[in-house]
Image: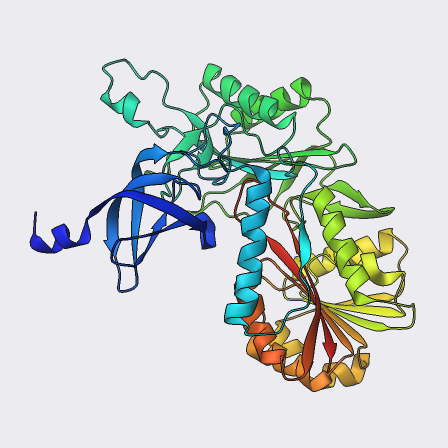
Length: 471
């Protein structure tokens, strides 16, 4: 071993894990005072650490020996925990997950934003801690991920087909999933039945490296209305085999209201540039919220925790403080869900979004809901949202903004400052970029309220809503 790798890889014994940080990593302190980031421990554990990366200010490592287990721990529900990577915090009791999510939001707003905060409203936890997702995507593979025990055993590993999730950081390795705790039934029944039927009928599972096989991915969407959408992605057209599995699905699960497929021979499995073909039922499902109906197709974006999305939107509407007379701009409107949700308490809502399909869906949903005081426009936010746009559509009293993880472009922030609406409600799935944007607005706007909302229990993700008022 070279001297350099000896320096890089070190073992620290009996280190206490003291905190949880960004991206689900937990934090310990090395004897030299540097921070150690760990993927497999819980605050309160006392562990030996094997480091595998050394940087100027921190180490990255893994807990190898557990001397004391934290009282914050709980037994993971899922047998795939630790391999799958989808629910990194299943081993931490839910009240502690909420504590660290709240702490991360507060730290980001104060340390990155350097802004004065009001009294923090406690985070809103999710009523469902499992089986809360309305959309899951599973991948087929003819060479499933093998555990170390399987590799070291002399036993015949038998069938190597998998239908499940990518191993974190490995694009060509799929973990075969027996039971996932994220989406309610019939999701697990459908996935397991499809896998069994495909093997029994010699339908080839995809090989990512060789780009061979037939079955590529399967998406399942469910909704609070009872609708179920299943979409299978095939690598090539084989009419007989395709119809065989689609007919099996339709007959075995008559509750499927939308059965669709895609033939995708590209190197990657994204479907946004692909034709989605309806095989049986409708080409969409419906989600319902407070009497509003939202039509969702295979490519639609919709918040993946329907019940908690309802809570998030109620907080957003409450923060907006609408009286019925306001002109509201809804930036990054997506399919216009928030815009329509607040419309009945506003004079008019103008939604802007860069994805043309999303705006088409937003207009369709507004028509479906007989909402006449909303208008939707498509275009890159930093280009569309300009002075001419304001002159055409009016000076907003309230701006609601719900940008992607990267936050708002600085030009968009500047334009909000130029317009200077009375109130801005900023919904974010990344409080670090939210804090950066709030810092840019701090001279003109004061943070009045902030409310974290947990949309994704068992993971480190957290949403945050901030109300800003003009100083």
